[in-house]
Length: 277
Image (tube, rainbow, N blue to C red; front, side, top):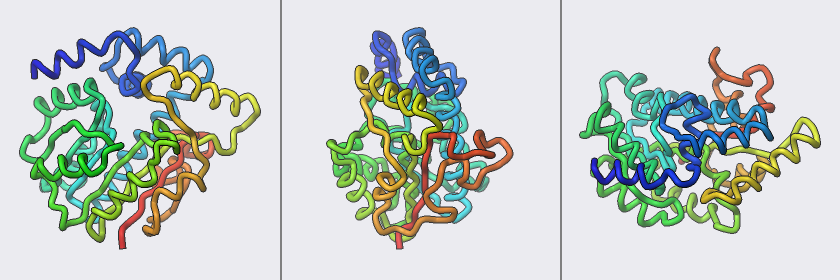
């Protein structure tokens, strides 16, 4: 835990995308430098906090549905900072027999450090673990996941990549990375994906604001790329999309707490969950 604390302390000289996300979700694991950057984003795109809440709410509903369908193993790639409800919280609540296993994966030292600190306090170490690995190195990542002993590769897994793909440009070839995981996962596995989109902006002003958002992040360690539904949909390969298909996140099994439920397209977040044949 001393190493985890040192990682947190050494990261305070620049904004962290994970901590900015935490700030917008109402978390407490963020610092002045993150809040200043977040306010800069909010001045340009006033609803950005709601967009991020949309991603987090989708994650909870997707994990709940995966658990309801009988999947007991979860791998959350790019899990970021622990912000309630976490994957293991939702999975255990949905399956109170506590038979689910969760591997959180992140390549950002500060996010990993915070996750390890949280799990040490509130999770079951026999079923929940946080590890360091990089989505851009899928073979190594999958080997590290299996090395935890938490995942039986012969059984279905819910692979979660939530609010991550907009930080990976097409020039970095996310397609081959996701295809690698699709090949490795057992039949019956589920792929949970979401990302921000620049599709159907309400005005030219919003279109420019979304472009400015990318420019702001270009000067951080997390540059990114927004995608249309067609550009995003390819990541599911030939897997069958569960109902209601590829949609704006608030339209994916909404509940009464879902932000943008009445006008899902205003959320700027697209998503889907697909099952391997």
